[in-house]
Image 1 (cartoon, rainbow, N blue to C red):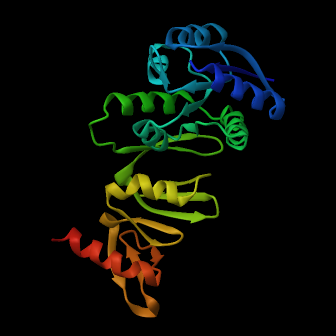
Image 2 (cartoon, rainbow, N blue to C red):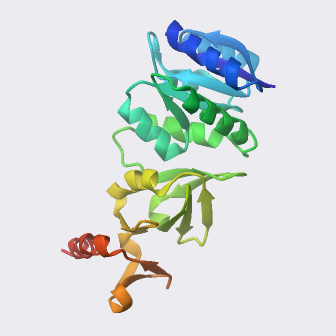
Length: 251
């Protein structure tokens, strides 16, 4: 059984979460609940759970305040939020799982299964520490990305990434430091994160860093040659936008 704590100041939301976990996640044991920041900090530090469901907006503060106050961090975290756009952006950068309110049982079940899988990851607190750094430096440019694989958590410099390739619901990151990292999230989510950092979609399955393009080869419909020699396909409907982006880079 996985010892689980629910932290939410809305009784209705907490009851809904309890119901879904009790009915559909038999491996979960809800060992306690908390209704505010202070209780959340005390409960996590005292009971040292495997999994924490944490609300973002509470009457006396935020879920980030809970994370800043705890000294036990060896757990899988699932945030619950209704509308905090910045928080969602932070979760995406830092590979923190979240579910949106109102809660749907499919989302709760999926997030719970991911949380259980994440318990096997080494140094789970890396993502939490990076999340807090992101939150505390909200106005600064975010230049690192957290990537979770089945066994590790990587902190990657965004400008070290030269190419992302998808296959189904998986995305593989290729970096200048010759790392190849595959995560179980689709490319669309990373396109949203990386677009402001000079990344562009060249194909349904490919996202590239414009800084690392060596040339566009026009033969056979066209493809990109990256500075490391790798070749990336270009779809017909992406070609015009790609050429414009390449031209704009050198204005």
